[in-house]
Length: 380
Image 1 (tube, rainbow, N blue to C red):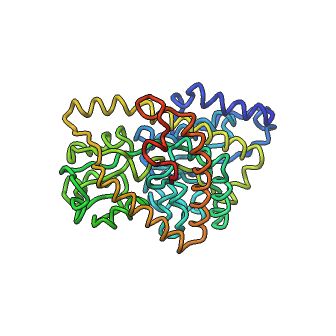
Image 2: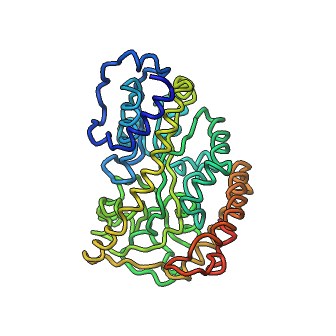
Image 3: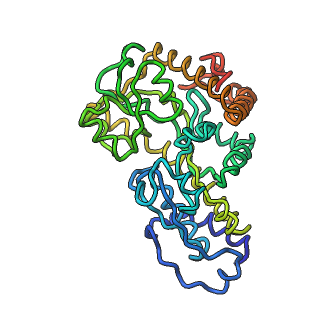
């Protein structure tokens, strides 16, 4: 099989849904002379994941990624997918990859912010880009180059491999009427948004997805954010905290990355690297499309079950935006990499705003430019 044929094969594999018929850890098929002459390496890697693979949209992408790569490589390239905590703690995947404990991982880079401050900007930015704007910045605006530089210094190669739209603003037991209601609130929250909540007086903790429901049920936390409605409801949050707030101010986009150990990346060779990159690009559009396509029906069904779907009061959103901007400025002043990634995103958004405001209708139809409507032209 030629390199060109291999690349065509991966697109076909992802496009026709071969993954539905492939097992989690498929046995390698017989390798014919075409596969052996393709230039693709023969390997079997461990892929650690940060999200349970039984979660729709959020967790199933690594399974489809692995199945597509196996099919397109005629079984030469195998990814054994491991659940969160099975071989690596959910929040320590990049660290395990850089140390060579596993060859690859699928994660949200914001979990690295404790030791790599700029990482969170690659995962989500409060009041920041929408998903298609982020993908444009990543592929066309220098985002990927920045990530390669920053993570390359750690011996890791990051590939954008999944993208979703806004998360919910969280699940709460009690209605919020103003910023004072956040004071003393015990809430599970991630990333820079968690720091903004903490600045307004909330008691913020980080928990993996599999531990959140129990913490809610036992009263260890009063509220939580985590992911899309379809994911949160699969985890049962609405059974304990039936008030679901929007918009997802803290994560207007959420990006997911495949991270590869540098030596493992080199082992792939040009053909293998091209195949994995194509597979991840397919994962980006697949995950975004699925995420956008499923939420409307989920929200309608949740309302029928008695969930109260509410918008955060404008006073709370305004306070969160003020705190978020202050946190971004403070982080940029402390870390040079954080500052240059943030500056790159802001410069890209300033140019993109010209296109967005002229080309897109405002929400609900009509012709009023977005920047005139809500003053958002200067974001992020």
